[in-house]
Length: 114
Length: 114
Image (tube, rainbow over all chains, first blue to last red; front, top):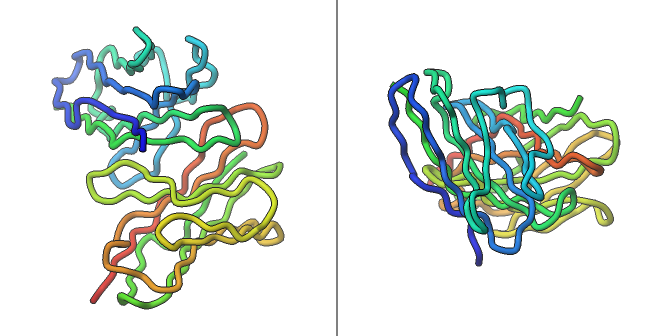
């Protein structure tokens, strides 16, 4: 079964540094998402992306965050100047269509900010 | 505003016993409802989904869930739990129109004892 793959599985970064989290969505999927899960808390929506632009974003997704689909397969989340509170598990997801189609999640990238 | 409540943070059951995990949602229209499972160090795997029609939906690994509109609930059930079912279970609600982000509950951790 096709999978969403995320790299790296664990990223350790100094506070203030930029970090890029990478995702390869399922190949025929058109909608892409980023979620995060702070340790012990619920999974929270960050952003959705369709047709090379952001379709929706949460209040968490402020100016330090950006997303990009640099080529036909990768989907990236960039955090420009990381803060301690950015430490979390970041999940990428993709779906074939919006609404009725379920989102398929990757295994996540654990981001640790020192 | 949309929200999902999973009132049980942690449940312990004996292997072979039946299981019910509770989920209540708040949503202004007909929701799309999902259950995801997260094993340690893994991503979110879709167990089952409800969009419309039959209110009892079957999923993978022997799980089922029943949508009860009058109670705003979507409880997950399994008649006989296996040790491999030990994981974190998340209920999520999605929009029936337009926006496509998911709202997750805080999760229920299932421990299975032999």
